[in-house]
Image (cartoon, rainbow, N blue to C red):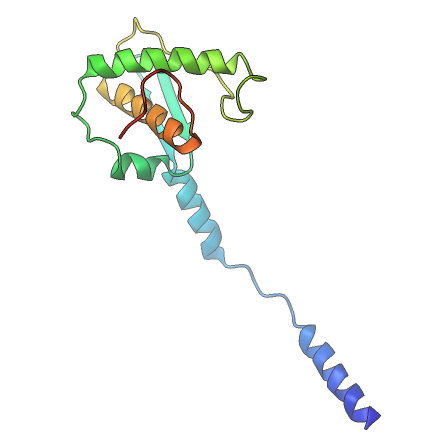
Length: 145
């Protein structure tokens, strides 16, 4: 009887010592695709600037929930972006007062430069996305979609 128990235990032990299963290559490709999807790059070689937004979910949010391009006038977007950038940069300079990790780097936005509609549209919508996602209010304006 004891030998049958030992054989069962030995069989269980050998079964549990199975070789490791290979990692799916597709999962790495999916992660790369998701990371690329969550990266929005806006650049203009004439003005020598580039905006790089790496935020999980922003690109999907921009395509599905944001107001369509052309909904706002460029002057409206520029005025709001001026306020949002000023508030953002103020919070970057005060890391002890605001949540760490949210405001890591300054945004260099010069109101004298015409960045065009595309840049202002995507930057404005990033600020809206940021405020709604992280429950932050950058200005007295309540963020809405």
